[in-house]
Length: 468
Image (cartoon, rainbow, N blue to C red; front, side, top):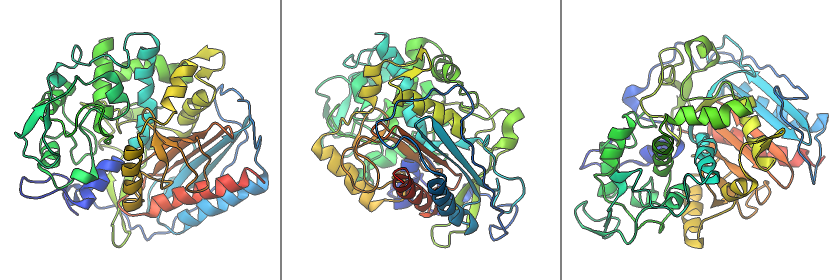
């Protein structure tokens, strides 16, 4: 498989882009063989419960206040087909609506069988990190410690006095001055001028991004934050600040911004203000040794054959130790119940029980589309071309703060649905119209369409059965 580290005379491949978009690295040299065959039999087990663990409050519901046993049986049967096919070793799914929560647990932790998947399994969340990490910045905006239109120069001097490429395909030294400083809003909307962009894949700037380790083969930065920012500051912007939506890098910059404003590690602030208040006890940027038995391997299917190969083991793997860089773009590990608590808070307008986590306006800003028609066209084209990569539901139409926002009905989901998908085979969305939360977690990466087909089938079936 192609390495996502392009040399100056080798343009990044399509597969490199796929890894970047989904926060799942795809370099062949680092792929380790599985200890057993993916052809081995995979047991399928299911478990359904009526309430989620933890004090998740009941939300008001305007439509479809509950789901039927028959409806959930249909969801179970659809997901079971994917596990029985051996293309996905195991999964955990959660559906919540009208005060009811249903959880399905299927298959095994490993492709060769063995320990069963369980509700408490910890997953690499990949790009589904973004909607959660964004809340840290929203807390600071709520408290007027950040303002949307403040220049970031005072906290991120590496991004001051930017130069911008004369054209996206220009050499790195063919630049003009930025027309204005980069603002907090530019980072929140992923329009600060640098990012992963398929329209510039073959250009010198993209090669430079990979060469400097700003988006390495591991899928998230491995440098210390200050060094990562220093290297980022050596590059010109591709576009003027605020001019063009681009994926991923802005979310990692936001994590550094939060850490510098609060004078504490990004994870510490997230834990104090988001994770602990919501009871997200298994969410963080690594899995402690005492919980490592709850982490499955991350598989990267062969793009041609679909054969499952371990990309990242549990014990001794990348998330088994604290990272040098706490990535707001794709670094979190978590469980289905932790993410349920977070998305329930969003659907409750920022409230968790009687405790306010975010203001209602903050939640509304996060979940409101902020893309121009031109930016929407770019995202739609990307979804059509790379539909099985971090676009688990295909075309959404819009983007808010750190998440997709559905602006038209391209498939079964409602307009206004918000959330995101991850390249590790994860999908997490809330639907304010139906007061619905859906979460499906696997650890089969998007190097081929298998996990995304499961995601698509999950949502297609779910939106049918909630009306039964």
